[in-house]
Length: 436
Image 1 (tube, rainbow, N blue to C red):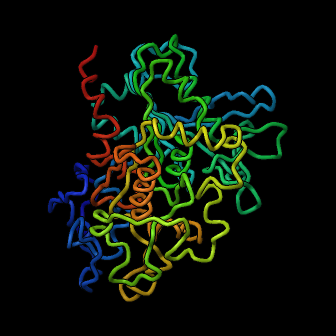
Image 2 (cartoon, rainbow, N blue to C red):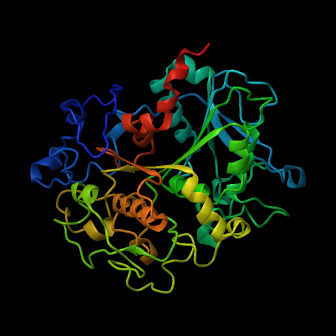
């Protein structure tokens, strides 16, 4: 009642360097702060222990709402089984839709933003649409930017009769965020990777989108997982480049990564409340690597490098069709920027006793499998270690980019509306605001 969370103040961030003004902090000063349990030295000494893993509370600094429309994309299997792939797009724009037959000559930027495990595609559409509008301006985002969010449904989500869906992992289904095929209950199916393939190829139609210049392919959390693995494996990237499109991938805050070989960061066997995943330490850490799991992962020596934690075994059919050698060769040259929130450092299992008298830690379903622990104790550590891994693998310190976002936790909204993220996502498009 004493805190006004509705104002849309700018969400500022920096890469590694802390730039947090006082106006960002007041709504976080809850009663728990009196306990003295503070955990975010990189972002602000004023943040209570349990208030920063999830991003801005109440949406106070993050513009979460918009008018959205659900559309349906006809895939290569629609003719066979009548099923279409749903996706969300902003209402009230003139940028058209992914599969609209009309010519959209004004569109210069296309942005795909994939939801996470909650499968809230509409929300993610709004997060990204509002980010584009705030950075490039209302006129640009409503006429020159086509922002859309694929929607994955499980059978338990009660999709419409003509909407493609996936089998629930808890009932034996494979993981959609690892590129699994849609439900086996139909006569034909598609990988989630193939759905993205076909959507992006639709955008490469130069008759319909003659002015399209850049394609951003992004996702957060489980959406970050699918986009990371899609960047590694997809079969249409070269066709998009040949069509004159600049394609850039942005996986954000995934819970796990697909390592390119059997090496993993050397991690401490035990962590405690005072040393666990301190973001200021992680930001400057240089990891050693060994061809064996360590830390909390010493019991999965035979499985730690299986897909999707690695590429050793159990590849989904789409990845098998590409082949490991081809994936390793193509991933190096693709434009990939990893977005990592420096407040995404929570782990309920490790920290449940650290702040028991203060509050409950929420880690937003962090993957706590043995195979995931081989990559780090929290999402931020896993992201930083993975980027070092790929640079070691390719023996190239300049391959790909990591943007570490101060004061951003596990929030799909905050991760794309932080100023440093916007610079990475759209910075080279700012000049297009003046194009008539």
